[in-house]
Image (cartoon, rainbow, N blue to C red):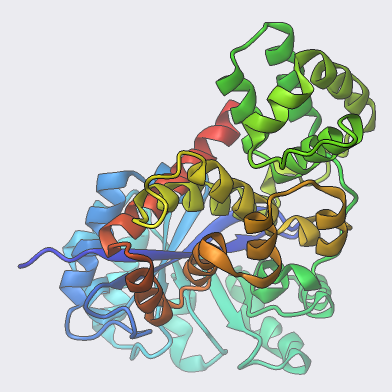
Length: 412
């Protein structure tokens, strides 16, 4: 069988404290990326998934969390899925699967082998009674199951002791209602679309600030100090604000984190970190999916900038691309508007144009990464062709960005 490449989409799954605990992984081969369902190429696609996870390692894709993977009947019946680690993967049974004795037997076998099973886009139906005794999680689509019907449905599920996941949660009211009804897991645009998320004050994790203080006190090299800043979008933003505050009248545009650090100097940064330790906000921290998204955006744009023919001769392009990505969600993670961000930061015009209007090379790169996040594989194909990036390069940049963020969190 000819080996296929695949692109990976992720959507965070959160607990009742709005912390990321898992991801739904969306795989599209280069031959079937436009299809939401798996067709006759099921075994080929299954091989793509398994090869991707085994070649790159799960830690590259999902870090310390679990990964939810959709399975149709052919993939469910394939022995190849048993190569996946039982403690890291949740198998989602698609809603169009017919309940047959063969299906029930297969699910029972996988459960006995230690795998976690979930029913996707599910509504209560007695025809699934045999599966309700087996599966661990039921995903309830709020677009299909109106909130006014949820209480009755939950009562039907209660005897089975199944964990409930509300998906396509689009508002805070929906999230709070589902949480009060007993849902334990949540997924949807309420968490992915920052404009709907409850704002938090601009504050950094005390652990990150202490780590930075330790690096500075040990006279760590510039590259190590820069890495500490790059792992957190809020920290980057505050660094740039500091540059603006202590360097009034600065004519030179600040293009990257290393530039900002060199302008300030270690002594100024050390004083700032010491003061900042008294005003840290440790709520949610690195488990905030939006903070993670911003960090991964920056890392992915940095990788893609190296690959773009248009930028290959610009040594500052990777840093500029990273800066664009990590700042692109700063207005929605924290209680500040993008206009205010741009008014207070001395950013170069190409970064400003990318952040505000998605214009210029960095703006087009940012659009590409946003399409990856939304798993819009059809538009992604057109975009990468226009940017001169291959599908292999896009996949490499995406996986490396996930891995970079995982490493930066584990080091924090």
